[in-house]
Length: 308
Image (cartoon, rainbow, N blue to C red):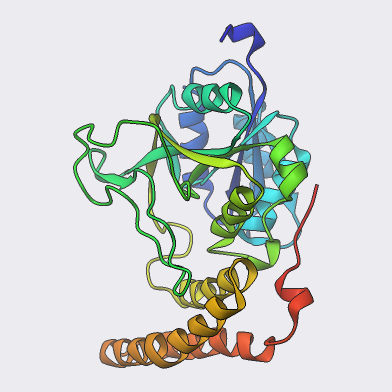
């Protein structure tokens, strides 16, 4: 592609009480080679407003301050609405990027109108030769589980071939404005976790393909935002896993999932939390499951979506 004709890419990232982490990402983005882009930072009602710092140190960045925490989905949706790009790159603020990571993503999107989303290869930031994501396996329709291909293996180039994948990593995924107009945005009432998987299910259901592009490389500082095995993480993961199944799979799949989660997954987690002395996690697990029983027949709420 001729550089002066390359389409505008909007890179959208969310900040929540992590100015130093976001600053490291912005410094990383300052080194990329793609010539036509805008960077949108959405602040999800952080305790300290970073507006002055961003405006002073990154005057080219479009900064948006939300007066409430909209979560990952709502924050990205706010950024998408404020952006102007033909292509929309959702990038976790706890990532740093290879300077040439955008070009191969844009090239794939430009080549084939059937492609609705592309995703980068992701390595661990603290283990930069180790893969976190190199594509994904199909999702189980009963447990909403999938596996990252190459996870925790040394990168010897063994996954360096572009391919269709069921999912791109939510840490680094690109779609187009046209796809958003046809499919809608992320369902913001997911708030945190599984929202990007739900979105990608809808994108594939609309007839688009999702591709893994290994030439695009991103480094991820995993679980910086909520911490590992936090109560916040436990609640949203447990609630939203079943929510994704209810929104995208058949009634029989949903029934089996309810039975599995109620009689197998929940007792398993009960024992695990008791052994670890994590009674708070046990409580939020039951609250998450209870949300679904309370909303058992509230189909309007379960299937609500957000649109441009």
